[in-house]
Length: 102
Image (cartoon, rainbow, N blue to C red):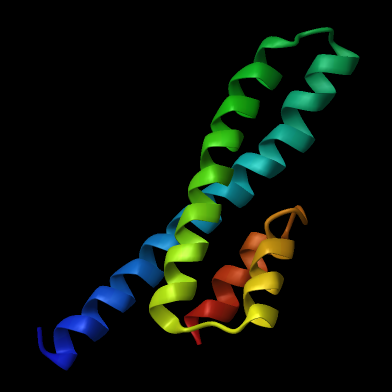
């Protein structure tokens, strides 16, 4: 493998992580702002189950890809911790998506 191949693979991993980060953030906001109010105000638990499962799968993908990118880009513990904290703040993945673009 050449250096260009390694760089391309690292960039691909980062791009994939950024996409999953956005999807996870959107699913989190839908869960909090749409599904949860429907569950408690309109007594409709189905959206919470559906979006909860989608969000859970995206969250697991987020964690796995974050670790993969950490290894590929040699992130230190502090940066990795920021990435993990961003996943549990409702708008954190959007900030992270923008900051990783730099």
